[in-house]
Image 1 (cartoon, rainbow over the protein chains, first blue to last red):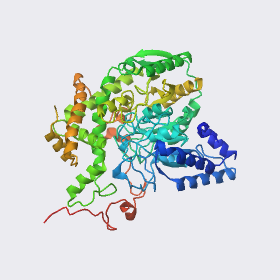
Image 2: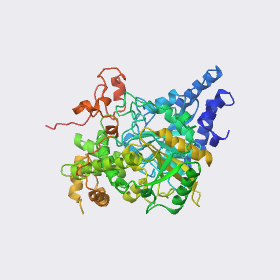
Image 3: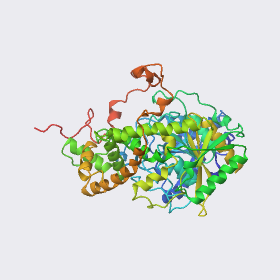
Image 4: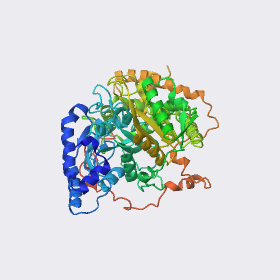
Length: 477
Length: 112
C-alpha cells in the first residue's frame, strides 16, 4: 500500500471494493507514525481506540455492501486546537496539558459523520500563536522535507502529518496564515475558507474575528471534498454564515479559461526571496497559458496589514485568554495562598513566552488611554484593507500571490526576534483581516528542494473559484 | 522608548500576569520593538473611516434596521436544553484542578 498516493476517493473506493479495509489503513498509518514521528513530532496525542472503532464501523458497512459516506475510512489528523470529546486537547499549551473536552468541535463531528477516521491530534504553536511551530509547549515540529527546518505554523503538525504520509488529510486553523504558510513550507495544499463558512464551535479561541478552520491535503480535490463536509451554518456559532454551500467538487470541472486573475504588485516587492519570486512568476505564466487573463493591480494598504493584524489579533487574544484562571479546566500553580496569587502564578507558569507577549501587547492596546490610538486605529485600517480587496474584486475573479516570502527557514532562525517571525505572515494576514478565502498550493521547489507555495485569494464565499484555479494548475503541472 | 518597565508592570497587573524580572526586562524590549513597527499606522488618515470589528458586519448586517436589530442574522430564540444539553455537574467538574463534587474549590478569597 503506497500511503503517499492515497486520496479521499481512492481510500473510499478501495474500501468499498474490499481491496483494503479501513482498519488496515488506520493500522498502516499508525505504523508509519510509530516509525517516522519520533523525528518529526507532528502528533501530540493519538486516539487509537476511537480511530479503530470508527474504522470497524466503516468496514462493517462495506461488508454489508452499504454505500459508504464520502470520507469513509479516510485517516485524518486534527490540529490540537479543536475539541475532541474524551480525547486530550492541549492547544500546544501547558495550561491545557491535561484538558479533556466534554464535547466535539462541529468540524470534527462533521468529518466523523462523513466516515473519517481521526488518528490523533497534531502539534501546533501554543494557542495557534506562531509561524514556525517552535512555540509549542511540548516539542517543536520538524519539516519532513528537511529536518533542520521548521514546518511553518501554527498548523505545523497538521501540514507535516499530511506531507509525511502520517494522515491523508488534516484539519488546521488559520488566524494570520496558519493553514496556508505551513502548507507552503511542507509542500501540501492548504485552504482557508471565508470567515463564517465553517463553524468555529469547539475551536479553542485565539482571535475570534480572525479564526478559521480549514483543510490541509495532498490534492486540491481533497480540499474541496473536506470543505464540502465541514462548511455551513451551525446554530452553535452565531458568526457561521447562512450562505448556501455549493458542490465544490462539481465546481472544479468548470473551465478556467477567461477568468481574470489579479497580480498585486505589493506582493512582489522587497523582502521576497528570488527563488520564490521566480517560482510564483512561472506559475502565473502557466495560469496565463491555461487561458486566464492577468490583470496588474494594486492593494495599496498591504504594507499596513502586519501592524493591523498584531493589534487586532492580540487584543482579541488577551480577552479570550482571560478564561485561563486555574479554576475550571486549566493549569493551576501549586502551593498558592490567595485567589489573586492563584490567577497570576497559574497564568505565569501555564503560558509560554509568545503567549504572554501577545497578551501583554493586546492588553496594552485595549487599555485606557491607548484604545483609540491602537485598537480603534487598527479596526479602521482593517476597513481600508478590506476595501482594497472589494475594489480589486470588482475587476478580477481571483488574486494570485506567493504564499510566503521565503521557503521554510531553519529552527531557531527567527525564534529570538518576534518581529522577524511576524513578518513571515506578510502575504497571508491580509485575507484573514478581510475575511476572504485563500488557498496555498505547491508551485515548485528551491535549489535546496524546499517546497514553494502559490496563494490564490478569492471573493467572500467564492471558494469555488479559487479551488477551480488551483485544481487546473495542479492538473496541468 | 514608548514603554517603560513601570508600564509593563501595570499592564501585567491588568492581564493577571506576574512576570519575573527577566521576563519584564525582555517584555520592555520586545513591546518597544513591535510598537515601533506598529507606529507606521499613523501614516494613514483614518478620520473618516468606519472601524471594522467583524467580517460578518460586511455581509450579515441589515442596514435598513436600527440598533441591535441590525444584527438579527446572528440571533436566535433563547431555548433551554435546546441546541445542546447542559453538561451534568460531574462532567463539568471533571477537568477542574480542585473540586469537591459540587463546587470548584479555590483558595480563600476573603481574609479575616
